[in-house]
Every structure is written in structure tokens, then in C-alpha cells.
Amino acid sequence: MAGNRTFTMIKPDAVKNGHIGAILNQINAAGFKILALKYTHLSAEKAGAFYEVHKERPFYGELVEFMSSGPIVAAILEKENAIEDFRKLIGATNPAEAAEGTIRANYATSIGENAVHGADSDENAIIEGSFHFAGTEIFG
Ligand code: CMP
Image: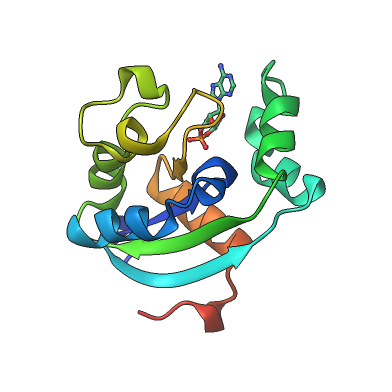
């Protein structure tokens, strides 16, 4: 069911700093079920395509370089009201503005290196999930 799914990535900063386990644990503890999970390294081309929507933004080059700088963890998650609840769980894009206890407040270092990505709509969750996973890799 589209409304019950979201898509996330644990970004290269959080992977490099050893936070994969803690972040997945916090996601599970908040009631999200993992339907698909992949540890991978995006090429600059793939990172650029994923963030195509931000192509005209001044930070696009930096974003693509960062997202292809090391491995990431991609996942499709399921929970009622997934999009909104997950965005609450991760906190504001800028960790300086993220509420206490949120994943970004706990693990992010800057607006660019902000530990996790969360889809912003049901439609984008489907597009982003399909970008990373084949149907046979999604369990649920
Ligand atoms: P994310 O939720 O993955 O979606 C787009 C990303 O662009 C965002 O997280 C940030 O990591 C990044 N981003 C947004 N604004 C800026 C900015 N001003 N400078 C650098 N990166 C940014």
C-alpha cells in the first residue's frame, strides 16, 4: 500500500562513522518494518540521477560528490503513515534544527552530510524505491 511505505538511505557519513546498526535499530524501534535492504556504493552517475530533481540547486555538485563518496544503505520501510512519521523520526534537513533524539540530531554533522535521506511523498517513495530495488528484492 503506497501510503504505508517510505524510502530511506543511510548516507556515506553515517556509514563511515559506524552508525548503520544504531540507525537501523532506531528505525525498527520506531515501528518501521524493513521490506527491502541493500548495502551499495552509488556511482556519481547514479547519485546524479537519483537527485536529478535538485539539478539546478547550487549544492547539486557537492551533493552528488558526497553521495558517491562511499557506501550507503538503501531501504524500503513500512508503517502506517510512513512518510510523515519517518520524516519526524529523522528530523529537519539541517541537523542544527533537528529535534532532540531524531536520527539527524543524533548522527548528522551538517546540512550536506546529514546521515539519512527520507522520501518526501508517497509518489517519490515509489520512484526512489524502484530506483534501488527490483520487485523481487522487496518483501512485503
Ligand atoms: P535529502 O533529504 O537527502 O535531500 C536532498 C539533500 O540535499 C538533502 O537531504 C541535503 O543533504 C542536501 N542539501 C539540502 N540543502 C543543502 C544545502 N544548502 N547545502 C548542501 N546540501 C544540501
